[in-house]
Length: 382
Image (cartoon, rainbow, N blue to C red; front, top):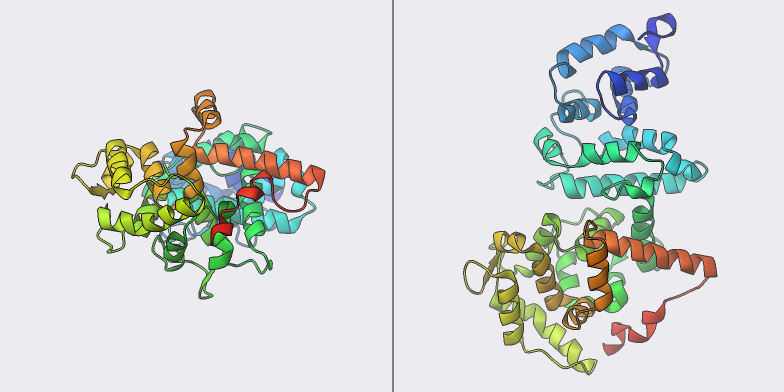
């Protein structure tokens, strides 16, 4: 297809991307900018045809996406390479039209989506998504799902606005001085003080991954996104790796009894302070061994955790999240019913949905402060 003076504008090029490349129209903007770096005027038909013949003609869908996004001379994708795609999504998706007059929220939404993409897709966690990683991911599938619906919130993998809203609000609630940084004391307040000091210390010691925040003793927004996604869905590969590294004190890629006991000691102390019936460590070790069924008795490897991932999340909750440990011990019937009714949802999906409802109700009622859990704030025991 041609345009004025033999060239194409972005809108016309979008039809080419959809019909010729057979990709979602949102990839037109990054590819247009790659072929027309000035990002203005028209794209010459010849420029596209030459690029098509060299890079796209014999490529599969994932490789075409990769070529649309990557910068010339690079064989990987960095976070900034997704900016043109996110610009297109924010401009064109009907489910995000309400954000047009709030540039700050557009920016936060965009960076949150990109952080989620790298959290899940960049298995090497080196900030560089390879073609191989992209091929193994569900990223293209997610963009297609998002394009096919006017309701952005039905795409749960990366693009849901409701998911972004929950992540951003959870960060904002902890960031008491609103300097867009979180310190150790801030993070200890997460989930009504549900986490132990020892596990929070490990996060700030860079045990699960090096914090991207350059300010010592602080966690930035990207670091928090990784923490939150790992904390609220401990069944994913990324989350299992995150928490195994926290508990693995000697760095030998497995968890053994003395390491588990180190973290459980604080959990036991908290139970006693709350007049909960204490559970001996020996009983916990027996219970998690029965749940996870490690190949070697008393040694829990990543392979073991992935083989029984749902139960593996409970292992970590027993060690350092008292609220979730108690909920597991009491076999919360409401949670069990939710899991039966929505088996396709992840733990993160269920958490985000419940939190969004809570946040929406608080906003409607203009409630300032906590919720019904305030009386159960575990911070009171310290």
